[in-house]
Image 1 (tube, rainbow, N blue to C red):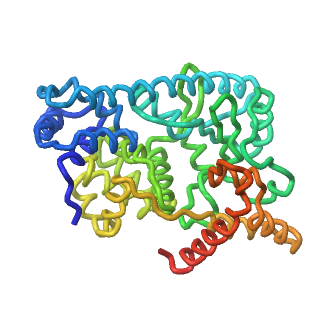
Image 2: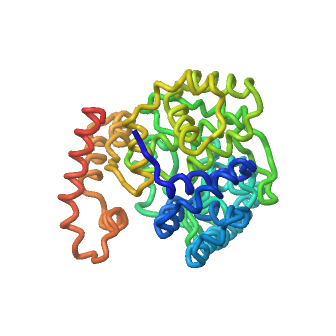
Image 3: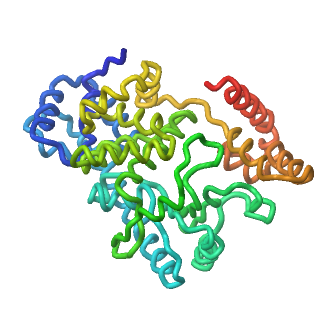
Length: 390
């Protein structure tokens, strides 16, 4: 059983954008119980919750109990998030304009959409890049638009061989520290869940985002995408708590039983009941995210003690083991000839020096050769993990 410290409760209770008076009173009661304010600052900032905590301080009647140095750190986390977000939005505005001129439809994903429309404050939600979904027939054109605007592919260059593999998104295109990912779909075919890309486009709607007309996912599909994306990282060994922030605040938009019935219908259609309701229940239990009692009772068996412990471990800073083995297994099915399979295997076993330096953050290029055995160890561990399913 997970026992939260007052510090933990305070951080998690700050996640809602628009807290009720009762929730503000709860925060007020927690403040005098906190003994380790450095822990509060470190964990909240590292999990991306710092700006939301900063935003609540002025609402608290006993905020004088919070040390000035802690208030300053939280304020700085807000300003850093705000300045970075504004900078990324400038890039987005230019990119969206270029795509519109070329007649390419784009669908804004995750942070670039949620920061403005859900949080309504560029300083409250951290995001590091621009994720755009385009239709398959616009893939090459999209990359050409970015290239002409000065964005360059990060890492190994895409080549004709790479185009034979399954593409969820292309290598990030980067300009002046801003990364853009062009997505063709939202997950690998190897996954058990199937988010129908044509269905996502059919239910998407057009909005004005940062003064540009772009498509966004429907309310239901937005929540499903956030949960499925979060679940993937959860089981790969690391998560961003912005996912739980998003779930908690997206659920505030659910009005009645009809929304929940629609959510369940789509989850059954996409075969992602477990992936979605695991994280809704975690958000409900630890962040008081809105969820009807009948929903909690219906899916409560999904939420095991192991998952809850894993959630708290991540919250406390634990990073688990990650491996690209599942993606490599998925890619092999797209290669028909023995020569193609050999080339792909060679690239896995002996990736380029530039790839290794970036992957392992190698400070001294002369040491690259020593990291190959470590890569093989990680690969073997990934194979074992895939076989035993843990």
